[in-house]
Length: 355
Image 1: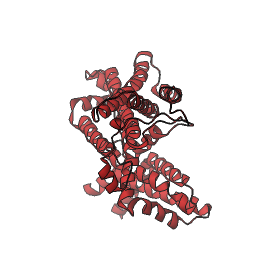
Image 2: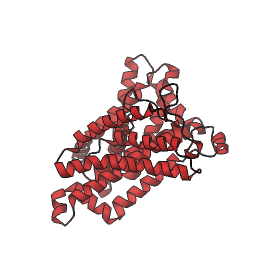
Image 3: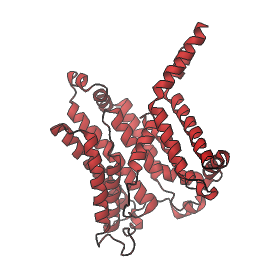
């Protein structure tokens, strides 16, 4: 009985249900578009699992998503809604790119400096909003939305600075090889993936560290206490304002690290934005699918990375890649209303027990 009850209350069960419903609704839209869902989903799966190099590309796509997912999840667990992961991701990628171009340091050291700068940039960007919340009472959602756009235009401005700009096109110069976090060339050739990098290792390590902090340390206990009930935490002697700033600082650093991994690992340069890159907003999706658990975010990020990479191949069968966005949107919708699933399943269980 207790085992059945724990299954019905498990977040994993309702996440799986939401994913299945998302695919069913995606199939409906594919049918409306005159495309066979079996063919489209078959191509999606084939594009991820049919060759080892596809799995490596999936992990490469997943790395920055895991970081932004961890960023949002960490803030969720501590009672703050970090909708500003997009801006923190952008300033992190900007810091990593600029230092990757301008500094001339030995390999490894150069990459570490760029990664540290990206984390610091994301942290500071988030802390500014935290200070506005703590000192002036300005709601963080409003501030984060503004700061996302400030980061957007700041990045486009820096991209066009002569010392940074490539000279042709709408992108920066390539970061120096010493700043890249790519696997050794022999390993990349063996894996048949030119962008294979250490980002996934860093992302998994970050997820484990965040889990330890949240679940096994007094810092995590204080932050969660403030998230559950800030007034109760204050009564218990916990400085709520300090905890909020700490949570936002760590959250911003994680998003900044995601930007560094994207620049130093995959793209190698920063392009002028025509629209928001969406990594921060996709991080919200990852956090929700992962139930705001750091370990859950690792698996959710890999799932989203597989959807993004596999979805990019749907054009081969003339299926719209936007179907991935439809599926992920439906997944989030049904996770948001998962309480309805809980009530329905509990009621069905009670009826069976009575009968």
